[in-house]
Image (tube, rainbow over all chains, first blue to last red; front, side):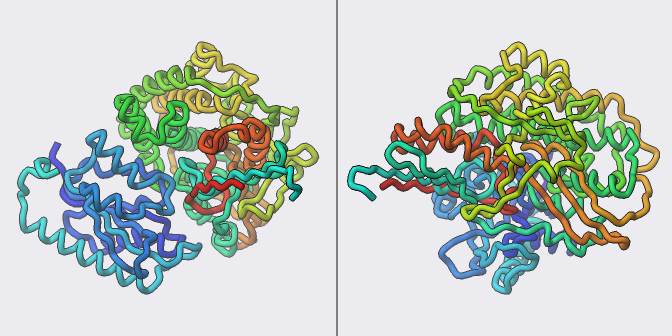
Length: 167
Length: 435
């Protein structure tokens, strides 16, 4: 089966402050109708669903709020195929299953998409209430711009080389 | 403290493989258990407050956000409450679709817990990643089973995460028969996996532990209660749901931001798969009953560690019933029924994967929610979990710290606690300390 190109997955609960940054980006993409880009809001659901959601895509970008010893709004980009990078990131998130475990499981079962990246945005408040803190919203706009550039780049460079060989 | 006294504190500050955030404190002095506290220290999210002032039509969608694992349960309890108040009679075709949607959630949620979270306990490994090294094919098949439930939920619920297709009075849209029938094969294969899972987990070594529980669940006259029913308990209660608030006592405890519940005058109680199984065994599907007997899993079943088998039996039940409903499906003439708003107190409940989920709303003549009260199953079980830990404490305190921690964690995981629902938050952590 031929793969679809690019998928953005927003993780987090939009009713818990900065935890909603993933869903915010998904809504942003959906409202702008980016051609060739699919966007899915995973919410605060079971992260093993990722294995189903990303299976048909070549380039997958996860967006999630993270806790880290960096200033609020810092963007952390992780290549999920890079073991060192992935273990460096504090994967404690507000979601039940550990994202790191899910990625490891997917790798073991050969269920990772060919390219998988995480954009983590350092959050300030995860308390009840909708809306992002200003720093996080600013970072979300930056991530959206970067994703848009990726989408345009992919559009220009089609057809791809065999992505599997780089996975 | 007197010099000859010995005090030991076991603190588990982050509970792995349960939903939400919580910790456990067990304090022992001179071999006596002084204190057992399941600590939930995340701030409550006050979903009830969020519902106040909102149109009643938003209740299914707002409450679905409380839990990413069991959103359908919240939608169904909300709809049951409001439809009961408004005198809405859901036609059989729509009710069957709701059953299908709810079974899809049970399949997903139970499979997640049995394979990804609970089975590693019995195999002596830390997590499903380690388990997959030795049980690769089984994990793959379990993921396929979960996916089948997810596909069913996506089709009827409108999307895979936080479904949006449920409304007061029915659904916004209903699937075509061909769409549903496409799911028959994955569900049939899932049934084969579920049968294998049940037989596999039934052979696990289970600790010898049988507390005297009061089981509480819904009971339905003609089916294994999931969507609705009367209140039943192993103490002989069989009452309309309207008695729920007289029967249970709600209590705040300083060490937890989740409320505690107990039966008035009787103490803690257990809700969830073990309660449903013991109270409604004869209504399980024929295949589920057959496997139960084959594996020696029959009521009365008091050992909470065996709840992993019961969850497998409930997966079998959900799959068997789903296949029947798929075969019988005829699209309803309309996706929903019209209704008129009536002011008053609405209450409703359903059986979430983790147990009885009760909702109450006060609705004005304008259809606006004035107050809301949500009682999730994990909150109801929290005192019972502490009681289990208290009973286990004499053996726990004789164990090395790591084994003691592990046994306590297992005792908590028996309940598949969704602390994110109970506290209205979602994350956990574990800590240990001794003096």
